[in-house]
Each structure stands twice: as C-alpha cells, then as structure tokens.
Amino acid sequence: MANNASAEKCIRQSERHRLHNRYYAKTTRNAIRSLRNTTEKKAAEEAAPKVFAMIDKLAKIGLIHKNKASNLKSGLQVYINKLS
Image 1 (cartoon, rainbow, N blue to C red):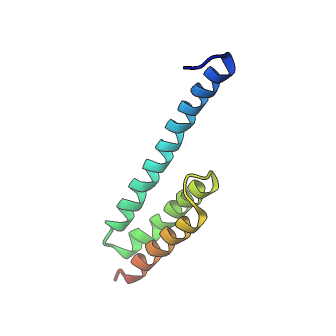
Image 2 (cartoon, one colour):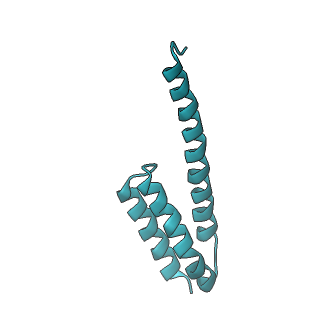
Image 3 (cartoon, rainbow, N blue to C red):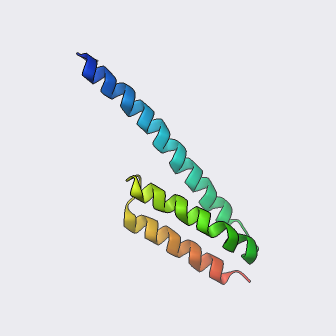
C-alpha cells in the first residue's frame, strides 16, 4: 500500500501507462495476424506499411526490442513476397 502522495501518483500513472501499452500491443498483434491471414498479394502490400509503422512504434516506445521488430517485419515481408 502506498505510504505517501507521490507513491499513490506513481501507482495511478503506472496503471494508465500499462493500459495504454496493452492497447497498442494488442492492436499491433491483431494487425499482424490479419496481414498473415491475407491471401491476396496486392492487399497485403497495401497493408504492410501501416503494420510496419505500428511495429516500429512499439520498438520506439520500448514495448518490444528493436531486433524483434526487425524480425517481425522481415518475416512479414517474406510472407508477402511468397504470395502469388
């Protein structure tokens, strides 16, 4: 339990940040999932820049490591290139 005002404020901020981060992470995961389920190359190529930007934003704010972001983008690009 918080002993002073600053500790209570820190708890409030942490909860707010946690919910904010969870929203962006979940939204990005859903976008990646929908891109992987796309079977048309043209649609996948149109959606890719938006999904890549979302992944880059997660890496920028520290939710995922920059190498993981790079691996995700690389894997998605390989998938898009294999579509016919």
